[in-house]
Length: 186
Image 1: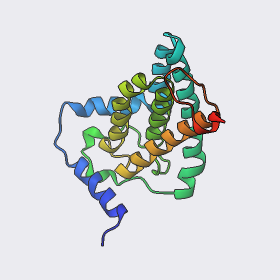
Image 2 (image 1 turned 90 degrees about the vertical axis):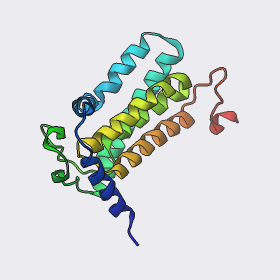
Image 3 (image 1 turned 180 degrees about the vertical axis):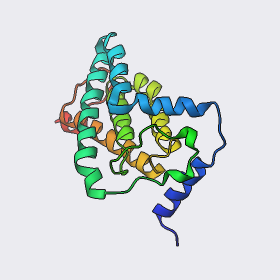
Image 4 (image 1 turned 45 degrees about the vertical axis):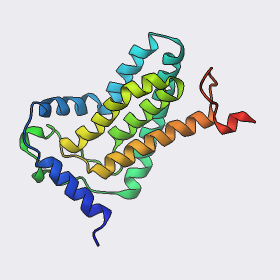
């Protein structure tokens, strides 16, 4: 019986074997734009201009992103210590100019994406839903350029969303039409 790592590596190789398309340079640009959370900081700045729920969502998303990034990079990556995928399976034109030298599991880019979008969605569900495809695209872009296995991305998105949810449970902001977390109902 083959384990999860086998299927993770197999999916990574399948993505590496996808023929070249016009999306290749765009996915590389997307993954680079998300470096150090820049994409989400820019989104937060635009959302904050609108005020109200969007501003609160942007702040909640940025806070969740910062906590999630710290958790992933300082604690989880060193504990799991998973090596990055072999870049030989991916076409050279897709690869990043400088490959990351940190561990692979979980994906920090995906964790930041999941945390920001989930944090935003907790304050403004429509805005979170609108940005969710972008978060998933950032995650996929990490596999597309060869630096993560699909499992790294799924775990990163889950960690980010969990951090955002934990923050909401700890520091709820009750809004009309948005149910408060269980801890705040007492």
